[in-house]
Length: 428
Image (cartoon, rainbow, N blue to C red; front, side, top):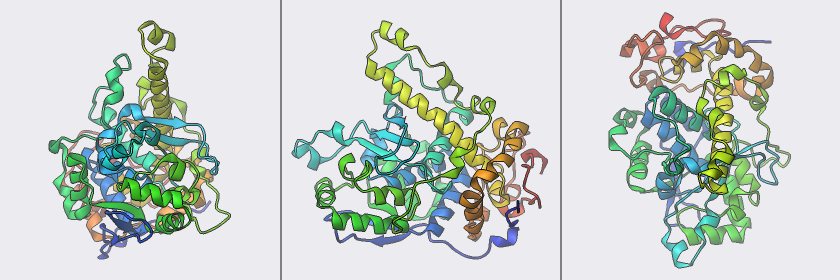
């Protein structure tokens, strides 16, 4: 099998990418909010910046951004409505899209004066479904997996205590200003300040979408009176599962997962999810999910069946996300540019991804993902000169040696001609 072409540092040229997208108004929906539309090029650049920076803020911002792109939750719902207990997995996708699994978010809170005034049952509107994205960089599953890995494996925050019901109410996003990362402003422009406003105050100035999803959204609004009514009523981009997220607008869901909605024969297929990763490596990530309390013990403690179901959904999601993280990292680390991009980041520098067992597992995934993952990543390698100036937050090597700014820049990292093995970070 032919290796992907090797990029040299000259590929990072003087080209500049606009991370802020284009501002538009969608005429078909009566909304008070405007939209930002992002090209694939700007999406690739922004996700590379956020992954390269690898601060808690940048990883949170990436999750926030991709959830805003892939769902119609408003800023208040993202800020306070998505808790650990609201996250789960279901065994198949929407009825019209035969996916094997879908990430489910059951938002606990939703602030909408319009919905409250009409007596809407908020609980019936709080569920949204996310498919695994065709592209690794744009995938909310990957972003969520990296954020939670950073939270529990890098920062060493205590994992959820399932014996205490309060675990389920812990917000996914922090709102502590001390966690903000001002370095991102020079690379991300206005969208960084919008993230800070949303995370801190629930302020939403724009709704985000991609160029590929815009056509599907416009067509859905044109053909569905129910969808137009729901959007105009909510005014905050939140839509019930009946109208958007559960199969009635399947083209929108496919477009949000990176598939072309204008091709009638388009089917949902993510080949990299077929790759089996070594179980002994999987079990090192989020190990607490393998020791969750027994149902009978919880019943004896007076806990409800719903509380048990919440724990099971969350633990099953984490088991899926650790597989997702290993699959995606194996692909990224096998391509020279993205291996350089991840070098010095806290996630990649962890013992799990520096182990010989992980390195050996990267070869096997190529046969599943050559055309679908490897080649698109190489063909769409970002070429913005600013990316070479992004330094990982608290950059360090696996040996514990602090990297200097010059050492940590992408342009200074040597590239191996054969990318089959990952160079130990501390050995460069």
